[in-house]
Amino acid sequence: MHTKTIAQLIEGLRSKEFSSVELTRHYLQRIKERDGTYNSYITVTEEAALAQAEAADQRLAAGDDSPLCGVPIAHKDIFCTTGIRTSCGSKMLDNFIAPYDATIVENYQKAGAVMLGKTNMDEFAMGSSNETSYYGPVKNPWNTNCVPGGSSGGSAAAVAALLAPAATASDTGGSIRQPAALCNLTGLKPTYGRVSRWGMIAFASSLDQAGTLTRTAEDSAIMLNAMASFDAKDSTCVDQPLEDYTAGLSNSLQGLTIGIPEEYFGEGLNPQTAERVQAAIKVYESLGATTKSISLPHTHLAVPAYYVIAPAECSANLSRFDGVRYGHRCDDPKDLADLYKRSRGEGFGDEVKRRILVGTYALSAGYYDAYYNKAQQVRRLIKQDFVDAFNQVDVVLGPTSPSPAFEFGAKSDDPVAMYLEDIYTIATNLAGLPGLSIPCGMVDNKPVGLQLIGNYFAEGKLLNVAHQFQLATDFHQQLAPETA
Picture (tube, rainbow, N blue to C red):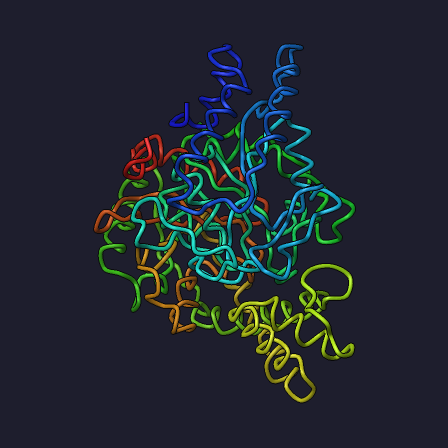
């Protein structure tokens, strides 16, 4: 059962090949037996999952036609879940039991999906390797000596190790797409505002976006159908008409124009990764698409702009974790100042502290105009690059990550090198565009990801383009060693 895609599981549930309870028990047993190797889950909700599966079976028996009814999924531990620890991978929230559900959690519950548990992640979603989690690093199922990518590494490892058929994730600068690339998965970051952020613990509010990690584009479309909604509780959620994201998957790519940014194929890109991406371009041309060389001239400014804006917003958002209302509190504080200092000093890890300090500096008097304001101006230029590009092309294509998965510790002591892992994904968040990563081959037995970027609210088009590639190739069908 665990080798089936979501689309296949839906078919099996409808044909009574197995029940939701049987399916859920199967996944829970796999997690129990195998997750000690990968550390992909922080919390496994066995009792609640079986109760939800029983309820789903009753709904199915009564004729419920919700596609995800009875399908087990996992949630990244950044999404609040009523009565269940929501830690955000941090000691600061190790004791936090959420009093409400995030909107996307609520949406999946309404659809009848079964929650297996909460997945591991970089602390407060800050990282590109899943090495900053308070609960220890997550291991890549393709090579357990290597990182799975971050910050949604737990969600990626759980799906790649077949410990969940799909998982929710979040993407602030590439945290869905980069782990998807490193773990041979399909990772979708929707347009900013397409999916509610209510109940998602904030890192950088103008960049954070919830999305999914699945094995196929078809599964991503099914997941997005349940996840996407307008939410009045989230002021950044856009009241845009919803579509059936599975409806256009079979559309022909004849007449499609794909933009290839020259800036994505320069220095820093692994030559073998570049070869896999170029081979993918040939596949698209064989499917009837045409390619066009384009320029995104401000690409080189994306990383520096991001690492001013994101830490500034993180500094503001994380100020609420002070040891007073919830979260970690130091023992026996001498006074209020001591409570603040020691609670935050003990509760936050090194990477989170680094970003808070950078962000606070960028927002301080005398530096706001020189750094934060200037970074926002650069952000506008980056957005305009994409606006100009989409006047010429339908989608933009390039590598997701500059190289395959790297070994643990290889970049831990060099924050800049770690930050450059997101060099191709960050601009999409700065512009608020949808992005998607799909498998496109192997380098040294490690997966390589192909990134597709679409125009605003063009998730349907992106998923169609990805699905047609997956019909023509079998990269996405390859499973990590020892998982089947």
